[in-house]
Structures are given as C-alpha cells and as structure tokens.
Image (cartoon, helix red, strand yellow):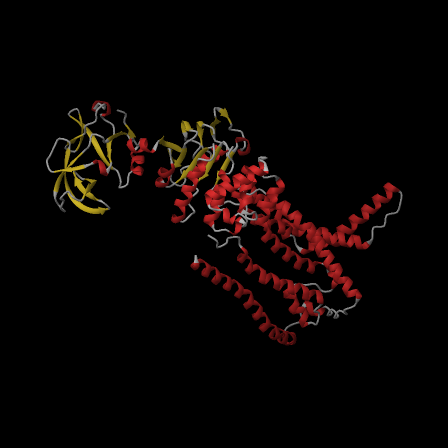
Length: 355
Length: 277
C-alpha cells in the first residue's frame, strides 16, 4: 500500500500539456479514491500516468515519496483493469487469475488458495475450468476484476471505468464484489468513472477532473457542502443548482430585493467583480410572509418528485427551482416569498469565495 | 439472452447461405459457360489463349504423382517460410502514428510488383546468382561445385514467392493484431514473457487471420509452380476447360478456392464471445 502523489503534473495528450493537473494531487492509502469526469476529461491519461503506462508531459509521480516517474508498471508493482473486458481468451478462468501470481513467483499452494478466494468472491468458482474467451462480457469483466485484485502485494490498483460496458443490472453486483475484494488487498485503489452516483457509492475520496485539471478533491461530504466552482456545484446537484447573480448595494450583497446573509464575507471585497450565489433546490424555502432575505416569485410549474415536489418559480427574470413537500399548499400562478438561506455559497468570478 | 441467441442464429444462417448461393450459382452457370465458350470462338476474333496448344490431359501415372508431390512439397516449403516470417514481420510493425502507415507501405510494395519483375528474378537473376555462388565455391575450395539445376529452379521460385507474398501474410496478421492493444498492455502489467505473450495474447488474435492467409497462399502457391501441370486459378479453369486444358492440379486449386469461399463467411461464427452468463 502506497501513498501516491503527483507533483506539478501535466497530463500527456493533445491540448493537455498546457494545463497543470494540480500543484500536488494525492491518493491516500487505505481509502477508495475515485476520479470523476466527463469523457475526454483526462481520467484514463491520469490512470496511465499513475500506472506507468504513459509518462506525464511534465511533473513527477511519487510512490511513498519515492520518484517512480521513469519506472515501468511492473517495477511500480501496479495492476490495472480496463473498461473493456480484457482477459486471455485461450486460458481458463483459473489460469487467467493465476497468471499474474505465477509471474511474480508465488508458490503453487498460495496461488491455488488466492485464486479460489477471488473466484468465490466473484462467483466464478463454478466456471474456473471454462475458457475465458467463451464467457459473456459481464463474466469476462468479473475475470478482469479478479485479475486486478488477485495479487495481495500490489502497491496500487487502477481501474479505468470498469462498469461502463456492463448492463445496469450487472453493475451493482460487480460494485459489491469490488468493495469486498478491496478489503482483501493492501493496495491503494484508484478508480475512474464518468458516473457521479457510481463514484459516490464506492468513494472515500473523490477527485473531479475537467479538461486535464483537477476541479476539486475531497470527501463526498466536503464536495457536496462546498463545491469550489459553480460548474462543479451544478454537476453535484440534481435537480440543477440555482445560480443567481448578486450585486453589492448599500454595503450588502443583494439578489434582486433579497439580502444575502454571508458571515465572514465583506461585500466591499467583491465589489466590481462577478458575484453569484449557488443554492441547491432543497436549501430554498417558500414562505408566506416577506423578509429582507426573501424574493417575491411567481409559481410557474409543479413537478412531482417521489416524496416531494419540484417547484419552478420566476423572480426578477430568474428561474428558481425549489424542492418542497406535499403538505405545503401551492397553486399555479400564485405569488410566494422564497427565502435565500444563510448557507448559500458565494462564487466570485466562478470560484468559491472563502469565509 | 434468448433474443441474442436467435439473432446469432439468423446471422449464422445468412452467412452460410452466401457461399451456398455462390456454389449453386456456379453449378448452374457452369454448363452454360462450357456450352457458350466454343460458340464464342466461332464469332469472336481469335484470342491469345486459343493460339496456345491445349495441355494434354494428364495420365495418372507415377510421373503425375511425382509432379503432384513436388507441388505439395513446394507449397509446404513456401508456407513454412512465409507464415513464421509474416507473423514476425506483423509483430514488429509499429501500430500507431505516421510510422505505422509508412511501415505498411514499405512492407506491402512487393505485392504490387509486376509479374515481369518476378519472372526476371526467378528466371534470370536467381540462376545467375546460383552460378556465381558455384563459381566462388570452386575458386575458394578448389573443388568443382555443381549445384543442380533443380536446386536453382526451386530456390528461385521459393525466394521470389517468399519475397512477393510474405507481406500479404504480414499485413493480414498485422490487421488482426490491431485488436489486442489492451491485452498487450495487460500482458505488460501481468509480467508475461515473450513466449507467453505470443501464446496468450498475439496468437489468439492472429490465428483466424493466419489461417485465412495460409489457405489463400496455398491456393496461390499451386498456381505459381508450373511443373505439375497447368496450375491456374478459378477464372482460368473456365478458359482451360473450354480449350480442353483442365488438369488435376487445377481441380485441386479450384477445390481450395471453393473452400475459401466457404471459410471466409463462416469465420465470424467462430468469434470468441460465448453466450454464457
């Protein structure tokens, strides 16, 4: 198990060499690290740099503070699982799992024990004598996952969007199996995915990547509470985040006629800059009485959402989405007071303002 | 699952129907062609092929058998050299970037060489090279060296065939190898040795394409060796049949061609993706 650090790294690939990933990006040992980003964000390139399959355009890769930038994956002692089911088609399931152990010089007894253990966890025991090439894609992906986790002594395991090619019903099982296997190895696990839900279900720590740079890294709780940019906040919010433009008037931050209460942020510091507040729909409240922190808005649409309702209102030319429960009496065309919460995040020039 | 199996069966039926249609069509067209060909000779101006005296029908004796065995030995020898060489060439070709295109162009050019160059190499250059070799041997050792004409003939044919058609095997295999990029990366991470890579990564990807290349080259090598009769391809069979020049080796070549017609469409059915879930 190693602590992986990427120092001043710029990812390889067209157009990425100009962008620094982050001054220092760390993947901690003993936790599930998940990289999230859209297609083309640089997830695979980042995993390849960690695994040693590609060299970074600039920067260094450290494993436990030891520079491994020039080392091969074999020397780094890394295993990897690709998005496509990569198995040795002519070998049996058992031999597919045993091959990485054999090539590291493990004893026959150890190999048999570990292969049986991984096979049981993945539900492959009954198929151990079958040729891997003859299995369905879902089963081949299980074999590939087993091969990535079969070595207990691996320093790091990188998983490149391992569930993306699977049907939805097969993903849950494989995710559970991954969780179980992760407890049987000492390796630092780094997984890349495009699916936010998938990331949050397995992650202890999430790294958001966009166009070759880290938008934010932290625990899922930290990311939800304080997304660093409006873009990230939008990605983390479903239904979509309300982003409302602010202005400084009479020494206060104002959204239309509503005052934004934001302790620790002096309005004078942000005067003349682009200021927005980001409020999740579940943070807004609809009141019947006006306050200095409320906006007067007209109800335009009500959408049923499970136990609650998603209400769309229009105020001063902006559209607001509010999640509220079924008990609150609301009518189309009605005028309501929407309260801006004290927890609203303030973004100055698109970046989260401290305080 | 059931639907995908049905779809697979439909695809299989379609793929098997294609060669059946070709063969049945051929059997229907064949008597028509053989009837019309002599009629065509009456109305059309004489063609170059008609000026050639028809090959006498072979007598199925010891000489014929020897010639056929010689043909088979020649084909086996050519394939034994071409296939491993082609596979090695395919493995050594770069797979990405400008270099890959350049390498393919360099490798493929003998395929485009005209027949006259091949004939010149075979009939002029190789005998001279063998003669020169004999002369050097005699001068160096002081003993006469009489490399037999048969050796000169064989080596000429074999070397020119290998030069011209190894790129064909290499290109077919290289194309198949494009599928194994991810597997090659996995092999590097799992620490597979060169032999293990060949056995578990490259060969499973290549073997279908390699089999295809072998059958094609087997048919083609029958056409190249002239000593077992008029060994020509399917198109020439019609011509020879019209002029009474059909030989046993032509028949073998034709059977192999038909085999290819059946094998090529049936190949996808052997794709390694099973239905087990």
